[in-house]
Amino acid sequence: MKRIILLMIVATGIITNCAEKNEPNIPKDKARDFANILYNRQLFEQSVAQYEYYLNNYEMDAKEQANISYTIGDIYFERLRDYENALAYYLKIRHLFPESNLVDEANKKIISCLERLERSEDAVQVLEETASLEPDKVHKKRPGAVIAKIGDREITQGDFDFEMNQIPSYIRSQIDSKEKRLQFLRQYILTELLYDKARREQLDKNPEIVEAAFQAKREIMVRKLLEREIAEKVQITESDVKLFYDANKDRYVERDENGDVKRQKSFSEVREQATQDLAAKRQQEALEQMSEQLMRAESAAIYEDRLR
Image 1 (cartoon, one colour):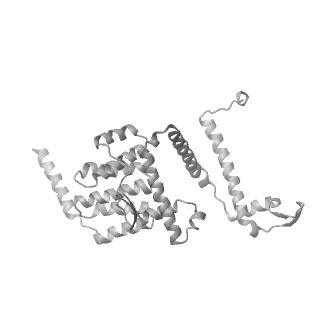
Image 2 (cartoon, rainbow, N blue to C red):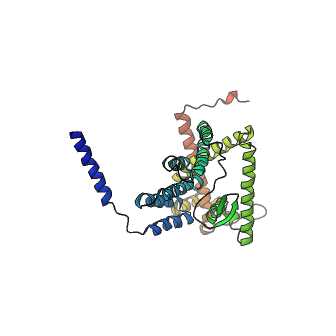
Image 3 (spheres, rainbow, N blue to C red):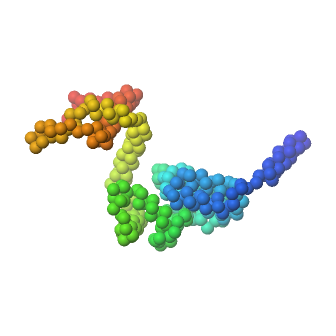
């Protein structure tokens, strides 16, 4: 009896708390529009936070909850490359909103997430459960005007801008007219079509491609580690650069055709180059220090006399 009374009290408290919970002062449509604005400005982490705030603080039906969850999953998948969080949101649609018309698309993305997380057995199981879905033909519902289509898949202005930002800045600066942007869009669509065709022909299972993908992944992981462990540690001030210049003035001279020094270049002339030189020197020193630490920590050894 006491347990029943206690449960009733707890339940009453929950109901009271729910009744007292009010929606934020910001109108619902403005809150969602702000999330869209953040996305279109390529502030992807911030847009996820705003979409989640919208999802958790406003009243909406199951259809809208599924749509917002799918949008968040797509941002994690396509923009942030965070496949674990993307997987969580796609699974949410599958299990909490089974009546949604996005379930099929979520199932396809679940497979893609599992493949990228190298959980191929789970991907096969999901594929069997969902009757041979094709994971790459996904209709994307995200903010931005639709500027092209590939079958049922929509390409938005946001997609285009994101792809543009993936290319080096010196190349991007040359795409300075509508005609050149249109040419880039055509190339992007052609690449997607060729990728779809390659997947249909199961080239992703080709041993050479599997090995190349592994090597590429390894190199990217190493580069990211170095950026975090080394680049962030190299802090250079103006005085550091000036001291480096003073100690290495022979690097910054103007020579004649015979190689003889004509004049000493001033610090202001070579400040940028000296900064790059000092950064490279300190990064190399940090790399060597990190290498020695790892070699000792992992008991690594090199047997030079055995090398042929």
